[in-house]
Image 1 (cartoon, one colour):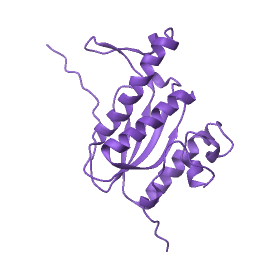
Image 2 (cartoon, rainbow, N blue to C red):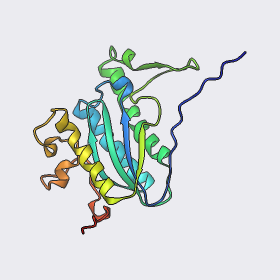
Image 3 (cartoon, rainbow, N blue to C red):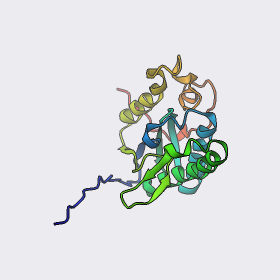
Image 4 (tube, one colour):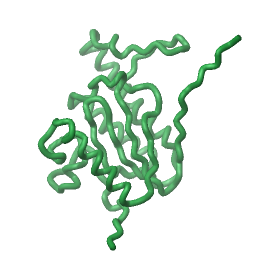
Length: 191
């Protein structure tokens, strides 16, 4: 008798007008985003994906072992394709760099899949976390949560001090490595 394996599926909802709070993790939660070089690869990948897939970036935070990104697609889209563009772009830079500069580290990124296929991974297998957001209070709460990550972890004294975050853009202290599309943010309703 054959045993059926159940695979975890991630349902994505590509609804025009919805923002997406995305979280994706480094392979085995390794701190692969702890160096400016790899964070810049991710920033460049998000900028490339924005050009290819037409979305606005509302907020982001790169932590040492994961990243948060809040985007708002401006036309028909497939969130899986957006994530693939971002993740694959980083992998195309990271793995060749490691082969040359840190080959002893590569075995830590080797992934043996159930099919027997072996590959080096930068990102955890799967699509990560994707939550559709539509209500302004929820959107702004998500931005606050994202920006608070480095502070809660003790990585900085103020959220706007963390370089790999849009918090400084919101505090009007400086522009971060990824331009933020604040003009398209929903307006809060005041009573």
